[in-house]
Amino acid sequence: MTIRLFDTATREVRDFNPITPGEVGIYLCGATVQAPPHVGHLRPAVAFDVLRRWLTRRGLKVTLIRNVTDIDDKVLAKSAAAGREWWAHAALYERVFTEAYDALGVLPPTYEPRATGSVPEMVALMERLVDKGHAYGTGEGNVWFDVRSWPAYGELTRQKVEDLSPEEGAEVATGSASDAKKNPHDFALWKAPKPGEPESASWETPYGRGRPGWHLECSAMARRYLGETFDIHGGGLDLRFPHHENEQAQSRAAGYGFAQRWMHVAWVTQSGVKMSKSLGNGLLVSELLKEAPAPVVRYALAAVQYRSMLEWSPDTLDEARTTWERLSGFVARASERVGDVPAEEVAKAEVPDAFAAALDDDLNVPQALAVVHEHLRAGNTALASGTDATVRSELVTLRAMLDVLGLDPADPQWAASTDDRYAAALDGLVTAELKARAEARAAKDWATSDAIRDRLAAAGIEVQDSADGARWALS
Ligand SMILES: [Zn+2]
Image 1 (cartoon, helix red, strand yellow):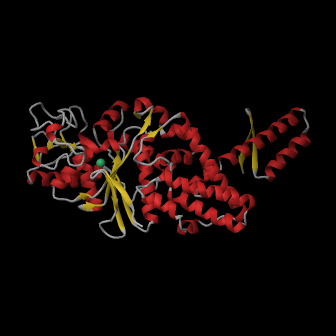
Image 2: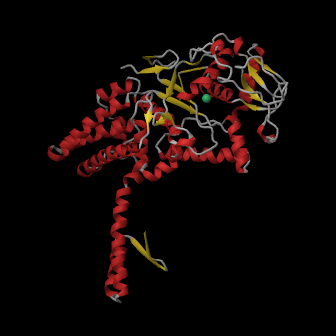
């Protein structure tokens, strides 16, 4: 059983052999916390959550780092527009992202470092690059990586510096006009403050006061938490260039092995176009969670193989909802018949070979879901005409597979979602009782109205009368 994963760097699916047997170090580029997340932001997190769960079930000890970019141009611009301190703005949206990750059942990373928490490591890396002749300060706080000094630059995305258009990946100096860089594709390790930026948003360095360039933080934090060389680096497809190219160049130029494999998660598209804020406000995670239970949203994001574009259409959630209801419906009915299966038993259960083979094959979730559906059919057949033992074994197998995808309907994570229909049914019944009570009261039929109240109280429901009518709550 070998896990095979596509490597963006070599453009082939190849065997995955961890550097340290039994352990895996993964660095996933996280959010720039400047605005609320839409599904496009969450897709890489969900894909890597499935990868992590699968590697863990395969017996590997996974260390997953997902950073928080809490200082950059956008954070500064958006916070200024909102009239907030930049750090308060970043903290606000970091919390919103955390809520979205939690809502979709994305397990917390092993560590979740903020860029601003690793400034000394970034400055040390920058000094190392300057000492080795791969970077230069131009005064005023700007420090540039010299792409001409590193012949392997462009290796990750198979581009040559000469072939890049002048504006591709190029950054503009933020200091004075004289603060020029040598080559248009030299990228910022450190940026001079722009006029009007708050003092608190820059740090002293040997090259002047400034703030981190985005790429530097990931190189510094990957080394801090995963070591000089680590197994997998991932992120959204749009991060390949310039972000990941630059990360790799600066880490390797500093003498570190850096990522041994690159994994990129494709976009969420609408009508074939990458989702963006202008298109995708309706696809804010907070909005989608009003339309559908959280596991339905997760299913929609997880069901497509991570390297394929996920076309989000009006049907996407409906289809996911139908499937989720079939899966959770079977788990509910089977559990009613044979009793709840302990989570530990589900965690230890063997998954079918075909399911394992699908996930071992570059995380082929659609193929794995086909195996899930075979067992769902077998489970439903067993419910209709099989023995309790067959029902139970299908229940355990199905839950074990869904657990790998983070979609086990019996997981307490989804309890609120699976209870939705119960809550709606209860509300319907109690509302009918309260209507009958209101009619009895209007007719001064106190005996009936009291009887209804007592019946509800006996069921654990407390009725409160108010000017707007009766309200109810669980007592
Ligand atoms: Zn990064």
